Image (cartoon, rainbow, N blue to C red):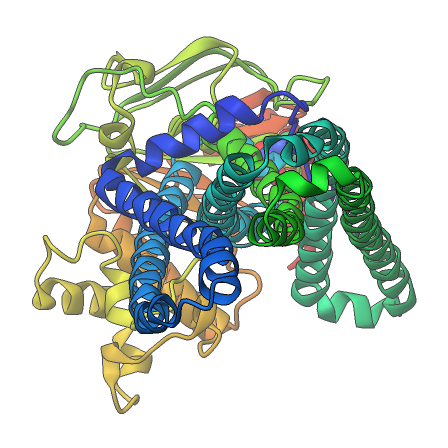
Length: 589
Ligand code: ADP
């Protein structure tokens, strides 16, 4: 697992395209979007209208003592607020409706895409990082698409409304704001750039926190056994310290920016008073107009402040969005093949095959030539790291080979549709993967629609699963727990064998790992595997020679090359590497 979280590359001027791409997700929810914007604009217009009436209230109502006007104003106020409330509800509801839909779609896309990217992508990116993207990053996007946009449009409209009222009443005083405006703009621009930078680092740090916690939790026993608590704890402390520092930077930038903008705005107010103190100017303004302009200016501070903080929120969302889109832009597996086959006979031909793992300098497989006839069993033996599992990984196109070819029934595997190719294989590996579901559903994983309960039961019986489920109160419907926590190693292995039996694919890949099991389990599993291998092409990655003596062909590998091949007897007679391994294991017994 790699610890370094790949920070999203987001250039300061790339927010536009990212936002546009996010808006595309909102396109299907256009109606909600329009309703939200209308709601926000109505809401802000009502507020601005309210402010514009201060002048009437003071000049006509109070100064001219017009009691009728005051009476009707009083009557109108509750209705204005009812309208404002309705507009607010429509805006909030509609925007959240769009926001939650967009987030769901985005999350689904990311989830689906993670199942489309090649295995090598998963090798290079830690699970923690990916989970952080699905959870944390997408939450940040939601903050951008609903909360930030809500305030942005609403407060923006409010600022506009207030400016209109101000200019209508006294353009001279309002001009002061036009001078101050650009200064505020410059501050906002600087602040938003900084926010984006720091948010990016926080995201990176959050990915690291998840990764390192996950690593510690998964490997907790190893950590404890090696007394490495302090090392892990220090690593974690280092990462959380960095996260905290970045958070503090974000907070201090935010606090400073708010104060800076308020100070700049206060200069505007001061200028207004200085201008108004001029006697000739004072004569041309009514009390009501002056009070309204001044109130508007003071009121402008709040939406302006909100606009700057919301901008930071929005930038945070955009940075997260960039990271999510970057993942969505990862190339999917190259499913270039067109051919679909129902059921292969199971002949496999590997010719002049060469392969190097991404990031490795030495080739992992060199000039592999191997033909496997349908219905025969081939065993791959050799030291650990010699490339046995890699061969099986190439058969199912988990990785793309560099040169040479692999053919299934005479057809290059690249000419087949990936799904169709993979359908021809069943795999029983030492890394048992069970889903948090019942035993029966685990056996029928991915096939629930096409198999009957009887077929599941028959597979369970053939793999000796029923041996242990019969004594369980819920039998095959027992929950296995997270990755089969509630079961023993042997039981888990038998479930995967039952899965392979039910799958009934023409080629079976067995990554033998029975050594960790007790003799009873091992015997059962061996018998189960034998019944599973019947009439199939079988490729066994063998760790112990005792189980493969009957194989039709044994291939001995070393450093990515085939160094010997033949039957058990012929290889023994050759007196080569196979003989050496055999003797060591024989003596070992
Ligand atoms: P075997 O199955 O014989 O034990 P493998 O096929 O698993 O050997 O590994 C062959 C070589 O390839 C080893 O050196 C191993 O480190 C390397 N290797 C295996 N898997 C990967 C991977 N996903 N990414 C990079 N290198 C790998």
